[in-house]
Image (cartoon, rainbow, N blue to C red; front, side):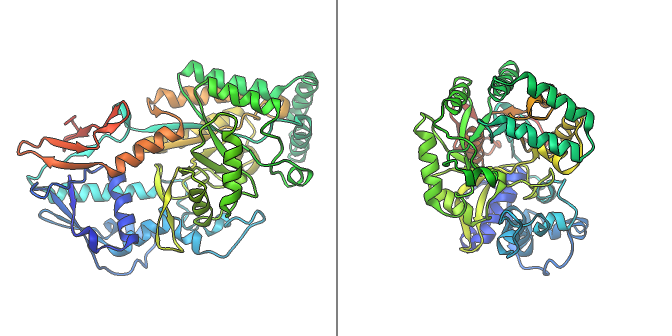
Length: 474
């Protein structure tokens, strides 16, 4: 357990950094003024002029003494730079999609994008608290509902509903450019066999069947902009959400108790109005839309999130790399969005994207279905190791007639592999609600025997649970 010393004296940036570190540390924050627990203080320190490896080797600059752990201000600034994407928000560089280039990300520059490094900082805080505690009680929060040690979310971007032969032809051309002649031939045979049929709807139904058999519910992101020749040419909106085909997929997702979310178009970028219009159009189909993920991950850190919040959205799931799998924010968990230009947290939660299927074939040159399974499993294992959240993206158009032979079976194996590790699995809105409450969790009373009164006690039917210093249920 830990109490924050003089939180009112901290700047918004410092409060943001402390909140993130304490949540990821899983330490229970105490508001009981009479409880004898470790106190967390913020101190001045040397400027962070070292690289991440050097900082980690020096214990992140944390200092301990009996009953007190001190965190240097520059470490909190680093957390904001990484988790809050403050570095990317300050960048003026843009790529061909008007995004901040991947190379501007500080973890890419440091070669640390494959590791959720901020969890290592939080683990350092947790270790320092144990060293400083002496006889003071230690309680950590079991991070996920049902006593689960980690969590997983399966998500799907519905990029295509109509015109599938055109996408099949583009994929064949891609395979031929890469010298994948045999695979291209298999795609042509499968595509010809599906002429006059709807392989996209069949692929959606196969994904939903796999998830139903595994007992999991997923989140589906739908485009709700207005399609035109211009949107088709630039790879943006390719279908009408009010069309019979799109409405059929929406019904199938709702009947499976999945979550429907917004796949923001290129128009929905930094302006709240397109976000609100597209969200409203999607909700007119009978869905409650709480979150978004930008198409092509096309967003401007900070500004896009302010627009999303103004449009009434609750979370964004766009923070992933466009050309690699990894941890763009250095975390595998839900975190508050940060508005660097206004120097404050945004009224929006961020759900970082950890793994995306198309990265392998498009950017790594790996076409074998087994490579998809291995990559997804490795990514999930990294999240499990830190007790975090794995968010995977599987496109339902990853099917044989559209250019991906063997992909359907690969998805089944990915679900099986992830499920074998016993995560908490839920749609993103439920995960976000849990994490927001967990971040706000407080011990409002600590008894002489170490008993704790929690506020809030839980979320819905799920209750928070604690561990003692020996890792036993408390």
